[in-house]
Image 1 (cartoon, helix red, strand yellow):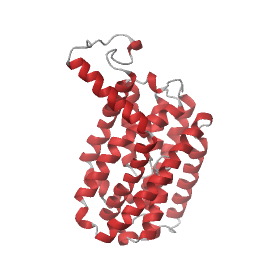
Image 2 (image 1 turned 180 degrees about the vertical axis):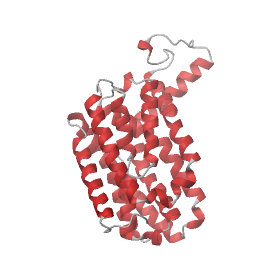
Image 3 (image 1 turned 60 degrees about the horizontal axis):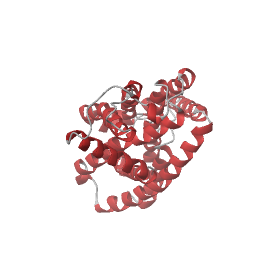
Image 4 (image 1 turned 30 degrees about the vertical axis):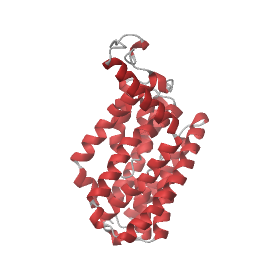
Length: 296
């Protein structure tokens, strides 16, 4: 991989990881356009996972205060329970969270619980996810449209009344199982998780914030796992280029987070739904006409 290709992939990753239009789907196109590794599916998958570390860094920087407060509260509340400074009571807070946990510590548990489904499914189907089948453009285009339709439905039926402080186990599991869809190229991690949040009755901005926080365990695990297991496939020059791509992805990703949270305060996800349907439809037509090849 050369540095220019890495910069292109970094820009695409940063723009599309947080905006609900499918980062993996766009990265599949970018990898074809730049023809990195001559279409080697294993190397492309490893590259995508490593580039995601840039957007992970963007989440850490943007939500630094949230992460610190969640971590501190989680440690404090559990230490107080172990030292019997607080009793384990599960009443109160309208049944949303155990009363011995602060809102921040409870949010930490919701992130942990919600991350379990994608961890199990991701490990179990690891070989399939890394293979060429998940780079098939029929799958990418279909999932772009399917998630768009589901997101539109969630916009219509969701009550959109819950803030982060109102989240409970249902919210965590709804977003957690929706995140599993992100393993399918074209689904979009943010699109799937925001959709799950809307179905659970979350406000758009709250759903997006929780979605971004939920990304941390999944992206960290997948990026580091791919880095260690595919280390031997990448050359020294690849890592130099990937380093540049990670930095670019981080900068662009930070700006994307800021944009989406500001956007969802006042607007719906309609523009992203329309974009997904149009792009997915165009890809399907081009595949049907034989203009595009479905495989890498």
